[in-house]
Image (cartoon, rainbow, N blue to C red):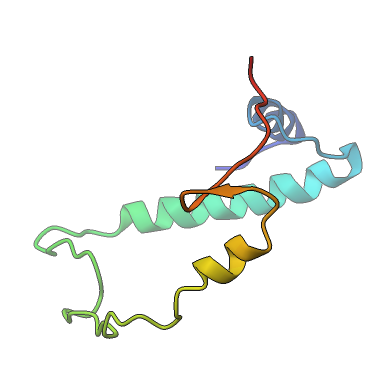
Length: 95
């Protein structure tokens, strides 16, 4: 499938993208190449091929869930302008 400059302009408008007129032919070539690749992939017979979520059938190694930092709440609240009962007090912004 080959796209022309007019189709690229329409796609750019629909996607709310601003492209320069002199760049439109390059976009048309690149998008046409992508669509041709998709057509090639669609032409491949995949009957009998099981879909997969990941190419490797392995579980991910997870790091241990440990606390990496100590609580610095008291330190931060000590330098805050207004604190009450462990909460930061801020000016009212909505009436």
